[in-house]
Length: 274
Image (tube, rainbow, N blue to C red; front, side, top):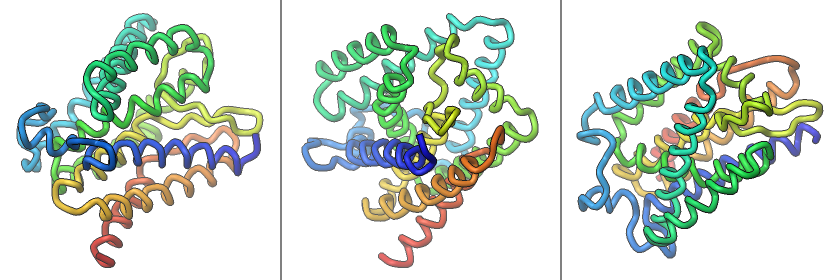
């Protein structure tokens, strides 16, 4: 697959995830009640105690840090089966949240079960893995994003970008996770696998989920068009880093920092034009 097609696949993944997340979060066409409204009315519990508290962003970061530490510990001792159980459980939660907010809890549970079974049966097929992740991330990203307001979300995306740089260039544990995702026998769904000429480009699920957290959080303070322009800025950042990586062999770079720069640039642009 040539470089242009690889980038187009990544663009589709990003746009689909962002579009779905903003649709269910804002209560778009066909959605009776958005995630933000459900949380405000107490129908869904937030992940953080207070979305307005600046420390909520730090709290989410600590949660991710602990989860990553646990994952690395399990990898060190070769406990792949436990990791897969955890991942499949996360799949179920994300799929249920996505589809239950589009339709209803019954359809949400049914869709979550069917897609999880599909993944279990066809877990060595990268297209199946990528397709299932497309519906997992909007649900998880939406509930996390709806649990923050603008200030905690800004803190969160900046801290996570710094962490991403350290994890790739410092501790290098993100490189290890990416290498694991490329090993077909592991079948651990940590990344999107995008065909790129004679290799696969590993795009972290966090690189797709964290922009969703930021754009959904904006819905608490700004109209939908601000989130759309912000998401467009993040897309420019994603395309830029992918275009650079595709011209290099064996190069691992953190994708979140340029995406975050794009998001912040898009947010500033939205403030200026609206």
